[in-house]
Length: 182
Image (cartoon, rainbow, N blue to C red; front, side, top):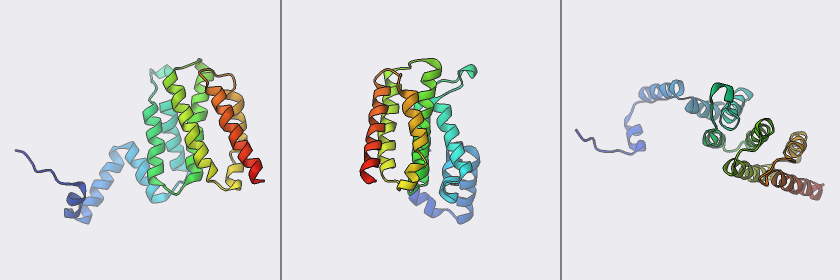
């Protein structure tokens, strides 16, 4: 039997509030990414949800090789994207998640040695995204990140594939912008 395809909006309009509540509850229980998204959308960026997003990022970008885990850069990036969709006006915690992604990738390299071009391209791309979000933060919010940025710049300095140089370049631009604002 071939069922006629309906748009999601149409199907949702046809359901009762009870059916929709049950559907959301089931989705919340069954899919960890959906749970994080729904919790962040409903409760904002509280520390518990932010920690869960960070864990998802860490699992993707800095896996536990002793447990036969492998990289899942897309999953790490999806966690950031899901947060961004759930909390669109939350640039401060978004910057935190982006910087966490970059820090985790940097520490993975320091622990295990060079990875590959795709890995570093992803880190550099996240540096660009972080820089754009960081520029929109207030000076007070930016101040909360400088210690981590200083450490990141130091930790990335000796990493190859142009990554260490790129981190230094982004760090330099952020410092210049800070001086110009002062």
